[in-house]
Image (tube, rainbow, N blue to C red; front, side, top):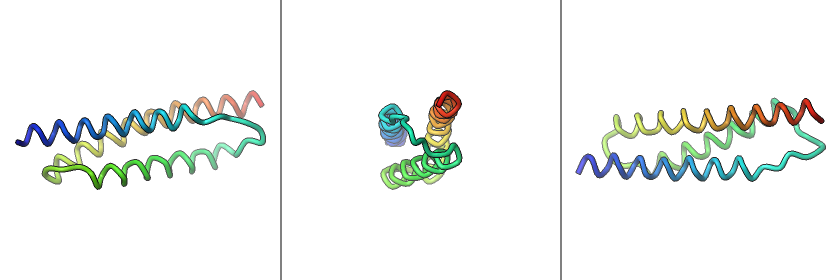
Length: 94
């Protein structure tokens, strides 16, 4: 039973990572651009939204949920950093 819950949580988080990546890939940079600081705030809000949304759907012991959420946050932070780097490059080229 415990392994099934762990796998269910991993599948859920995997789905969240894919959805977050789709969200980032759908963004179109255009002028007038918002500031880098504003984009960082927007992306941080997206990360918080995804964390809070998926946190409610996790199952199992709190320790397992915390571990999965930490992995999820790390993945979202990695995707966000890459996205923000692309945005910085866009701002430099505008």
